[in-house]
Length: 152
Image (tube, rainbow, N blue to C red; front, side, top):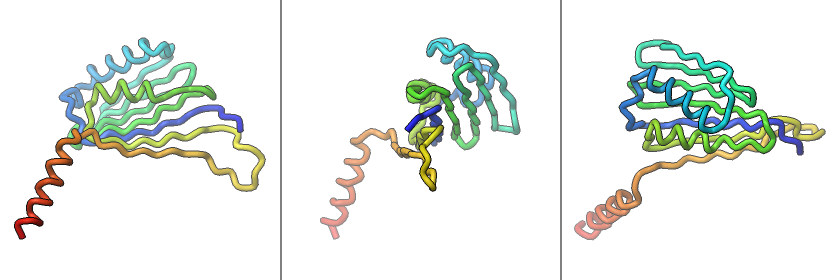
């Protein structure tokens, strides 16, 4: 199987960062990220689509990144498309995770390209949902539930 590109979609939920409302700060962080990761940025456009909704499009030689920030919902949606068989989009989204500080995330990785000569072409996907809450919060909830059951 020949992979031409990797496409990662990511949703960040309940972002804790106060930076969600600052279009220029987000744009500066994106430029710095591309520089740090060694991607030659060809174009970065940003737009305030509506109140509390910003859109960013980054175009570089090896792919593109599209990001929508909904500050009132504390939600960020992004697509990271890298045009190399061995591309690794995860380091990019992990840096953005540090910037936006989500409570929970969902990601789906698609391997794009030539999947062979089968009658039915099905791309391989991998979806992951991960809460970022501390484990002790879950433990405390379990203890409270068990305590209630014992008291009844």
